[in-house]
Length: 463
Ligand code: GAP
Image (tube, rainbow, N blue to C red):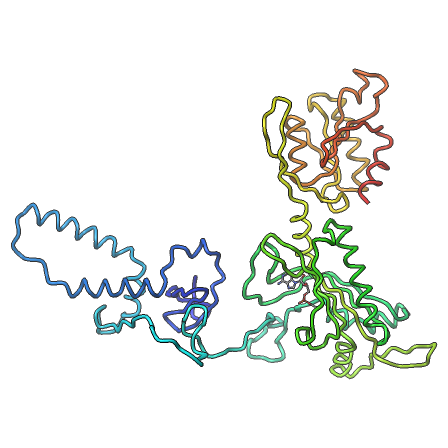
């Protein structure tokens, strides 16, 4: 990893932190453990430096020795030189000594600290490493705006939004005046948010650029606390409907002192991800904090006029705020299954299947002709594809055995597979002419449905 300040390669790892040996910059190590496994800790570095110093102090080899021994010693020395060439510790130490009239043994080697340090903020209590002075950590992404933007021009400074919420507050007045809505009403937005996360990991759980979905629900002040409870119930129903059952969601009533300063009540909805119980969504009663700030900052009146009571006031807000990526991750965690199967001959097999609720499946139905060489089966299958396409996402597949095609669709979570077979053509049983086989992803059961009923049959099951 390169230094984020000076770009130097000479960085030293200590626990989760990296120190640049060139400029002293201390950085958090964001790489995965397997990427850093080969690196050397400061303790190891010190040991190797001590060994190198001891080698320099060793007495020179005797000059007179038999030819045979000399050869083998030279061989050993060549091997040692080669090993030393590749030694990253040597590179670091050489770098530290560059331009200085000193060698390994002149370097002061500090031993491990054996004393207990108390009342000190100088060391990291987790690993004893030296800490820098406290520095401000910027949670937002700064950028410069304009064709000739200059980093030092304060007028060119812009910030990438860390939440969609503030865009909604900026649009509140416009929507209020143009839509002539009455309290309570909500404005929803879904879009990109950006955060300078120090520790982005666990798949898409925490990233620096993510998709957020928020609702600002504007209400009368006296309704705020009641509505935050109502929204909690609505949101639990939502997760249930998209395939995350409420039994897997933990509701945390965030206590006083732990809520954001603007919030009078907050619920955190947490999900049991495979890597731990983590936040999925926050539902916060934000009072009139945001609109009051925007009114003050813009100098524009943002009050709501209630025609019935003739009152003028700043509406309060209840905000359900969720991450789209986190929701999808929770849905995938819920849906993923490895099912053990035993075939007719007693052979064991594992079927990988994503058991999405049909409304969330990316592909709703797959359409196969049983044999790709059968022109009539292909024609009918293509017709079915054309009929269904305007209503749902479908996938046509004619390659490989039909069993393999089923498994491929199981892996991407397609709930229904439609096969046009010989019965469709009326070849084995005339009463089945014009019907197709529908194979269900979860039960793997099959049934026959008339082609003319297919669209309604599917729509009833994917809504
Ligand atoms: N407007 C309030 C707000 O933004 P938040 O708790 O900071 O509140 C709301 O964020 C939701 O956005 C979180 O519950 C989470 O689902 C999602 N979220 C926040 N930071 C995220 C990140 N770095 N990556 C992915 N999702 C994130």
